[in-house]
Image (cartoon, rainbow, N blue to C red):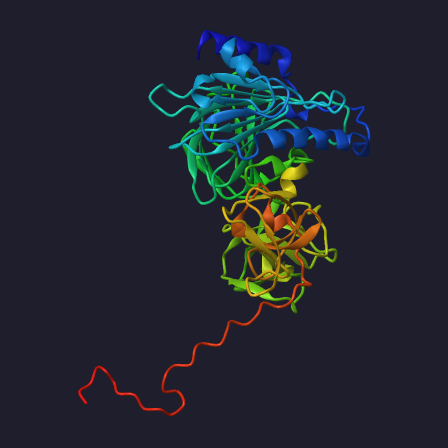
Length: 453
């Protein structure tokens, strides 16, 4: 560790973060409804600045962070939306989220290949790059989180969230722990003597002191340290426990490169083959039959508690009858009758798309090329996303007051398409045209060219 980074760490440990860690909360919390719009503005500004940012860079989405080395590198990352190559940053600290001040620390870290993952710093977070010189930058890090100084009850706890590309696990080290990142992992520290690894999606491996624990969505694993030394675990990871929902309360998951629905504490397992359905009813359509012994994360339940909304490791979601599942759950706080939509991007990113078609694209009155043309939308035009098709990759849009359907392939957008409402009022997909009648189908005889006459 360089002298500059060491000085920053000492400053953090003696009071900038505070020994109370993630458990420190302002007891004079004000109504969430009063400050939620301010937080929405903070998240939206950060989203506009950094969602879709390039790999190989830090992107600053909020208040100016403290950066090592100081000087030119630190100054370059101060403005919102600024980009700095990951290899030139040695350490970075983001500030508390403050609804009163209308600002907060939000920084994205997107290392380049061969170590591909996204790190998102929310609030009072400090990370140090301790990767040896011959290895990719930010493959090995020290992370410490502190408390947010705010009286707003809607402010989430400070957090560092790492997310691997879907289906592409990443192997990294955090606080002396080898992590096989299989999805989305939340990292928070308790002072300087414990690190909590909470799985939000995918299955990850947590290896320390010669032993590994597998952590599934809805679970957390704690690793302990001697006070003041977050780089050297003193014991193997503790067995996984159901996720403490206070750790993820009001977490702005729409800021992730791949937004997710947060899991509930614990998991369920299929006793036998169980149908995954589109709604909490035996009359609902079957998506797939899940074989015995499969472990699933729980996203919520229906009001009667007899159906669970679950997610498979593949990312597919649906409903299962609770009595057919072995349950290892904490308290389920997400209760709803209809399947919720995934989180949508903040602000215009969740509503706007750009046409990418050199000759323009035909807007149609229903989601298929067989339907009539409403108008031609030119290349580069901005359209407002309204809904999606129930049966094809098309979206309903508004272009200068004219509404119709465009093929998704002709659009460029950061919107989460699955989070758009489904328009079930579209006409059914037209049947394919009748095939051309082959010669001889009306009783005429034709010689076989492959046979002698």
